[in-house]
Image (cartoon, rainbow, N blue to C red; front, top):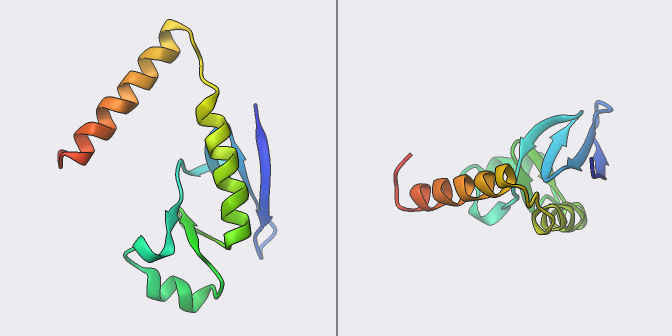
Length: 105
């Protein structure tokens, strides 16, 4: 299990990237980062967390934290399970991504 520390929240919970997921206190939050410019609630996030440049689920991240998180997420994507089950899972994710991009939910 690959773990990369990102930050500690104000209430003491850790934000980490664990096996390709941004996690809050060990619970999965997001598998990708969204730039703040592309987030639908960007104005409220920018007011609440000055300096935030990216969001992972409900977690705002600064540019430095986002760079660490993106590096860990990218590293997790590069290493994959080459077993038949692992390949099936990657194909399933690719099909879902293509389907979602075409507008099917």
